[in-house]
Length: 368
Image (cartoon, rainbow, N blue to C red):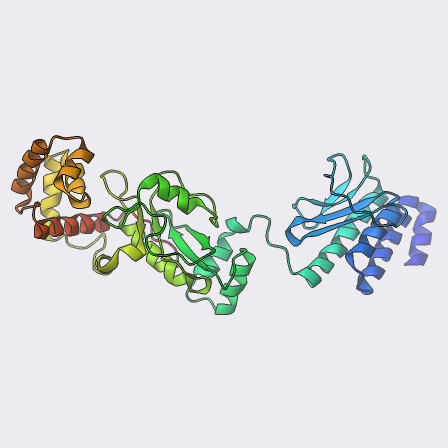
């Protein structure tokens, strides 16, 4: 290598110097040198102070041109020549002087960062991807019940999840998933709105779900099926439950829950196993469809009746006088063919509304 560098120097001094830089860092790598030695090499060869920073792995090394280490906490300047640890990544190694970057400087930066990446991967583990929360392949592996546990464990760690912690899966109507890490065990009903149908009030719930979410943010006002909180390695089960919960959400054309928690569905979840878009509608669902088609105000009225704790509360939610609601219910009962003012009738109505929602078939089935 030295002979080659000498010959190249006679023809092109920059090319000869670049070869010497390559040889220098190759020797450091072969000798399993540490980060400080690599940064020192970059500083001495370039004649400039060199700084290596990797925030993800807690690394900050700064060596001045005389070879002495003097770490400082000030920000790097954009005009300094720099190179990332990985292609397309953020700058991680700087030469602390204004550009432009010479041929030798460019080679120093390239070889030093390449060597530093090897050392970091060997000693501190591979850095997480730049945007781990947006890595759909890792999420897919984490939620795949057929994936080996070792693969799911690797995916969890790569996503920054604590494998001993808890999390829950969220299902969206476009088939994509989100995962919400839960640093402490979540008690039933925590951070939920308190509706009687297992559905949280929209805004507080959206805020709660948006916290510490893996994956892009939730669409504002969109439908979400929320799986139960489980140990991280059990997330495939939470994902399956979230997909079921999503089927109970309303698509916005009629009143109904936009967010449904799987662990609050209870026995109602069994309906999802026997009802699908192609299922023959039961008589109550057919009656409900006919009544809604003939009476535009009916969906909101019936939804209020089955979710409110009393008819007076339902009237208040609908901004109606109590007697007006009574008149509406009389009309609704004549269309449906059963009473909706007693417990049995409200149960029939609630089941009919749920089955109707399941049969709409507007949900894009998630992969897996």
